[in-house]
Length: 156
Image 1 (cartoon, helix red, strand yellow):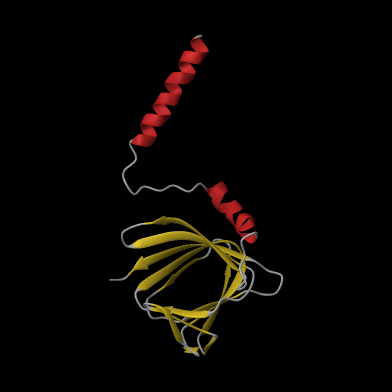
Image 2: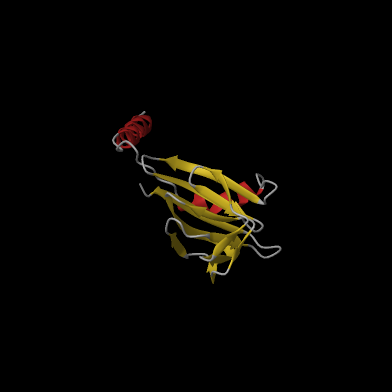
């Protein structure tokens, strides 16, 4: 009986502490983030890409991206991209000019590749900040995967 009472009290305290979280608070534990690449592998699309949104807030969005092939070249006219590499490796092409640019939705331009630009190798633990209006593209070597947390921040 005493054990049951203690369990009820502890459960009540846990509920109260969760209820006290401020509106808009989000917490994603590292073990869940680390498993996300494996989970997203089963959701890969024809572009060899899968995405899971974690939270959408007033001026930013947080999600997990998983790639098993090259991404298209892209440029965001009104959002900053922040990436935190969780696992895998990729080549980032940054700057230059987008080849065959097309507006795919308001303030987002995509193309087939980037002409020029600088090359950076990305691996687990790297953090990337891409300002607005900067072309960028991820290239994934055959047989490799790349999983990263994405934070998109509205610049306006």
